[in-house]
Each structure stands twice: as structure tokens, then as C-alpha cells.
Amino acid sequence: MTLRLLSGRGCHPQETYRYFAPARLSAFHRQTILNCLFGDRWTSILVTDGQLAMLHCFTILPIQTSPYFDIDAWIGYAGPLFNDSSPPTHFVREAFSLYRNWCWQNDIVAEVIRFDPVLSNHDPFRQAEGIHLVEGRPIAYAPCHPDSDDGQLSRYTPACRRSIRAAKSRYELVRLDKCCSRERRLFFDLYHASLRRVGALRRWYFDREFADRVSSTPEVELWAAMTQVDGELRPISAILSVADERIGHSLLVANLDPRAYPGAHDYLTHGLIRSYAAAGREAVCLGGGGRNVPNDSLLRFKLRFCAGHVRRLIVGTSVHNPAACAWLTETAQAQAAVDARLQPTDDFLRDLTPYRWAARFARPDLNFVD
Image (cartoon, rainbow, N blue to C red; front, side, top):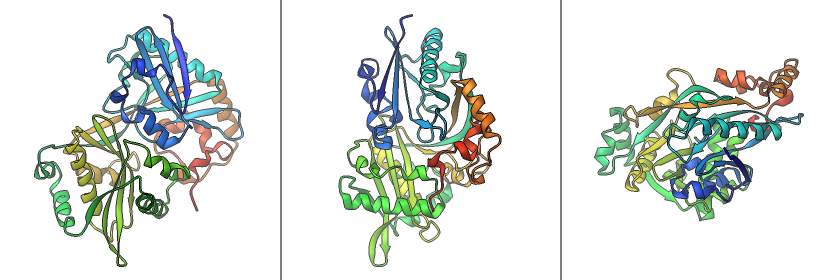
């Protein structure tokens, strides 16, 4: 084998598109969407051998007060992608081994990978070394019905259909002009108010330039359900979505007060699904629950649109530097735990990076915003 590893910061390596057609890349492998979400703070790795290639995109996070870093995929679904639907096992093993060595050389201790449930790109790694696959939480997908509104509604639960039909007379659905600063501000004012209402973590606020990057990203759409509030037409539910050629994603959601405006988000979600159906998408990913527990209320809400179309998120965990990981864990044992609300709901996260739950090594983006 003649393996080569190329890296890019805030962009894919130049040779990437020799192996992967841009239009065929899934949403969270697309440079435009990654630049929108993270600016230039993401890394792309391309490993090649002849006509075979592996592409992997991620963000590297510093471990405070230490010389080390780790990788935690917290939004979207990506994971290493191969340009062959059934790559040879030897290439998978050697490519991932070369990538892990690159991580070790760059002081990256451990990694969490969220594979794409639609692509099932975790499958080639079942025979690979240095990675452990874990079945994560269920992810809800709403199949698109391209022909009619009634056809789409027929796929929802009866209660969901009733809610949407009642909401049609109360609210107006609007696709906001993301290039208009005023309309972007309508979305982000509601989004930030929604984050404060639910007590969201700092990372969900992104950075100051995020709103500007939204305006220049072709795959991003902003949708809102509008109604009169204090004599002014205002959004009371909103969605930021992204899409690739097959799947739309309801990525960021905002609500003013769901109890005060019943059915608004049901109607908005339906409108988003209908829009992507008209554009020829197969389904809209609504995401998973708030916590990986039975009967999670957020997941129950999403499943009403899905007609049983649920896929399991497969998570990959990898320790690239066992010695450094052990040192971090031992050092953290004597430290007080961070805010109990930050403890992971998934056991594999607690087992993989126990140092992250000690105050000394806690991530700043996991702080709560006062």
C-alpha cells in the first residue's frame, strides 16, 4: 500500500474532489456547511491509496490546563466516509491506523464519532482496530411525500394532523430571507431567547460571526411560523435547516413559548417537510431526543411525523493516546466534578473521557450562559 494523508484547516485538502463529487457529499461532509457552523475551526483529513480514499471532518478541542486535545462530535452526523461503498478491509484498517497516528502526533487523546445513520458509514469499521462502535440514541426521519399535502399529513399521527390543521388558521409560514439582515435578526433574536428560556449550553450560541455566515451558505434555509404579538407580526417558532441531495435536516429550532402558541411548531415542521418534498428530498431528519432515556418527550414529539422511520445513531469511540488519556483521568480523579447538569447521559462518553467531567479539564463551551 502507498498511503498518503493530507490535511486541511477550514477546508478540504485540494485533492478531495478527485475522489468525492461535491454534490454527492452528505450535509455534514460539505465544506460550505462546515464553514457555516464552525468558521475555519474544523479539520479535514484525506487518506488515499491509488483510487481509494477516506475523508474525515471534525473539530479539535483543547483540554484546558493540559497540552492535549480531543474530538467530540456534538452536532450533525458525519464520520469517516469512503469513496467505495464496500472498501477493502485492509484499506479501512490501514487508513484509520494512519489517521490515528496523525492524531497521536498532534496530541489528540481521544475521539467521539457520530456516524451518519442514513449512509451507515460505520459498517466498514466493524472489522477495524482502534475503534469501538456503540449503538446510540434513535434518530427520527420524516419521509417526504412529493405528491400532496394530504398525502404528507397521512403519514403523521392523528393528533399531529389535528394540531396542524388547527394551526393553519392561526399562523403564517414564512421562508425568511437569510440575506436580509433584518430577517436574519428575526430568527436569531428568537433563537437566543429560546436558548435562554431552556437554559442551553454555551456552545449552542455558536460565535458572533455565525449569523453572517448563514447568509452566504447555499444549503441553509430559515423558516418561521409568524403571528401577531403586541400588534406586530413576529416569529414564534423557527427552524434553521440544511440539506444535501437526499436529506434535509432540521438543525436548529427556536420557540417563543410552545404553551402560549399551540401547534405552531407542528405546523412549521410540516411546512419544512413539504418544502423539502417539493425539492425532491427523500426525508427530513428531525434528530433525536434530549436525553438517551425511554419515553424522552422531545423524541416523542418528533416521532409523530415519522411513520415509524427511525434509525439508530452509531457512535464510534477511539483512544488515540492511551498513556495521555490515563494521565488525564488519574489527574482528574482528585478534582471536584463540574455542574451536575453537565454529566453525560451516555455511559460510553463518561467511560471514554472521564477527565472532561472534572473542573480542571472541563470544556468552556459546556458552561451555562447566565
